[in-house]
Image (cartoon, rainbow, N blue to C red):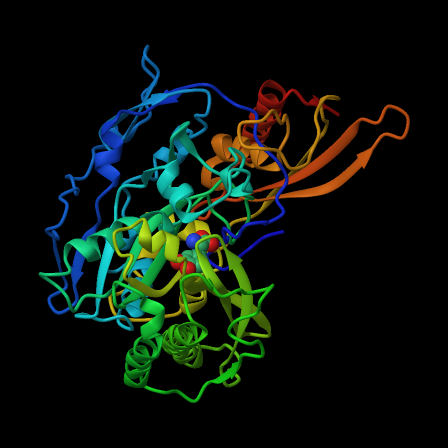
Length: 521
Ligand code: DAH
C-alpha cells in the first residue's frame, strides 16, 4: 500500500512488507546529538534575507563535496556534512544517497520547490508563525520515531524503508523528527518571543522506496504546528475558557467559499479518539476548527494558483475546487485527518494532520500547551503547480529546466524534450530461503522489493525512470518463487546509447546475484 499524505505517509499500521538484509559498514559520534538537537534557519519574509536564529547555533558552512562523500575508513566511519559517524551492521545508506545531502534545493529562490515553499509559508506568516528550514538530515532514531510514539515494530523503522547511518542514527524520514526541538524552543523563547506560537519547517527527507516518476528516495516535506497555552494546574477545569480563546483565533482566519466535505464527527471513540486524560471534547473541537480552517485556506491558495497557471495554458478548464477531510491515524496525533483535494478527476492526498499528542508536548517542555500539527510533501504539490511530470527533474542541473522558474511566479513547465525510453527485463528465482512478509526491525529478512530498487538506483542513478514488477509466480513443485522486473532506463537530459544501457543492465543483473543471492533466469 502506498501512503501519500506527505509524499509517503508514516502512519502506523501501513502494511508494508518486511525488513532488509543487513549490510555492514558505518558509524556515529556522540556529536550528532548536539548537532541535531537544535532548530533551523529562520527566514525573514519581509526582507527575503536568511538570518541565523539565535536559539541554538547549528548551521555550519556548506560542506564540500569531499566532506559529504561517504568515507569508509579503516575504522568504518561515514562522513556526512563534515561529521564522522561510526558505522555498524545497521548501516544501509549508500553514497548515491549521501551525494544529495547539502544540495539545499529549498534554499534556491528560483527553484520550484522553494517557490512552492514560499507560497505555503505565506499562509503561515509572522509574528504568530516562524518559518524555518532544517539543513542537517541526520537525526537520532529517538527523534525520528521514539519521541513521536512510533511502536518498536512500526514498519517505518525497518531498514528496508529507512536509511540508517547506524543503529541509533538515521537520515530523517519526515520533518516530524524536529517537532520536539521546535516545541522545546517555543518554551525557551516564551519570554523573548511570546507571540511566536507556531512554526513551519522545510527539510529534505529520505526514504527507501519504489522507483517511478512520482517517487524519489530524497524528497521534501513541510511541517507546521500551532500551540495555545492553558492554565498549568487542573487545565480541564478551565476548558471552556481555553476553547473560547482558541475560537477567537479561529474567527481571525478569513472564511472561504470552497466546497468542503467533512462527514465525520471530530471525535470518534474507536476510529479517531479524544485524548480523554488530557483534553475536553470542547477543546478538541476548537483546535480542529482552527486546524481545518487554516489548512483549507492554505490548500485554496495553492490550488487557485495552480488553476491560474493552468488557465494560461492549454489544459482543460478547472472545476470549482473541492476538498474532503478523511479520518487518519498517526502515532503522534489524535484525532488525526488527511486532507484530500479533487484535482483533474482524482482525489489527491495533500497532507496529514491532527491534534498533537499531549505526551509529546509534556516531553517537550510545553506541558501547559495544546495544539495541532500537519505535514505535507512539497514535490507532489510543486509537480501539479508547475506541471512537472517527473520527480527527478527537481534535481536537474540543466539550465533548460532551471531557467524556466523565477521566484514568486507559478509557471507551467515546458518540457524541453523527451528522450527515448529503453525497457529491459530481469527475471530471477529468489533464493529458496527467501520470504516476503512483515518482520521486526533488525530481524532477518532476506528479500524486500526496496533492495532491488536500491541496487538499480546505485547502478543507474537518475537514468532509472521506473522499475515495475511485471511477473511473479511460485513453481508448483519446488515452491520456489520467480519474479520479473521491468526497468525503464531513460535520461532526462540526453539519449542513452544502447551500449551504455546494456552495460547498466548487466551491472544490475550481476549485483542482484551478488547482493541478494538470486538466480537469474
Ligand atoms: N510525518 C507524517 C508523514 O510523513 C505527516 C504528518 C502527519 C505530520 C500528521 C504531522 C502530523 O505533523 O500531525 O507522513
